[in-house]
Length: 324
Image (cartoon, rainbow, N blue to C red; front, side, top):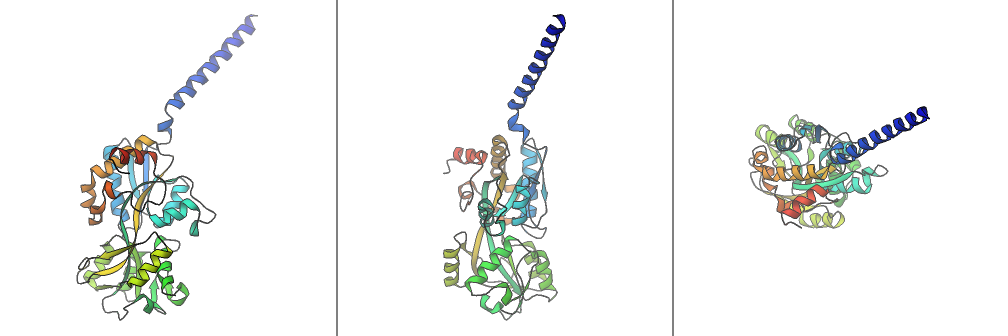
């Protein structure tokens, strides 16, 4: 009887300890998915995502209990795959690419990203068709047969280039197409190895500014009827205007844009995403000092073009700010 009683007491002790551990884990469930080191997927070092990502990482590190760092990547498409595989927790992405990832379409056919939610849209990602200053090309239709960089394979730039060319009745096969990241694209224009390059990024883009200071640049405008046709086919696009002298000596350019946005893993706790979203908008001036595109970042604009569901933490912030 003594042995039986001892065994029963030992079993009760084990069950009690397990219950306490379970209760403690449950109480901390909100923090269990919050890594001590958070990674923000950005883009190439020549673009806007990377420097702004570094600024946002600093803001998060300074204003939350989590240390954040920016990671250079191949851009929007790769960022969605990194988020889906849980290698990163936040990511810059074009709103069209976020939609494709969330719905398993186009380049994400068969590889839908299931843990994807939105934090905020930031600014227009302008489709810039960059040429050397002395180019004789005056329309997208004249790119046929020319040496044109259409963006890195599987990138958001590549998707934009394909869609813009489509409304002009062109495909990549009609060009001497080269699939280069836009830093390499601009370098190739500098070296005389390219006739044009598609660059989707906030204007001014550092690499294009550098090119304008050396060789000089020219930007192609897209005709109004083609813009209307593109927006009808792909509603993610908006008409956009690059003001004169955004790049020295380059006149006003009419083109299209998608929205740059911050996407987050749905696994991140609501309280953390709320704090990070609030910190982003409270410290916007730090980002403006990095790149002028950040002047467009504002709570009242941050739901425009949002193509996926908001994370509950971001939703809480916008509701408190009175933004529907």
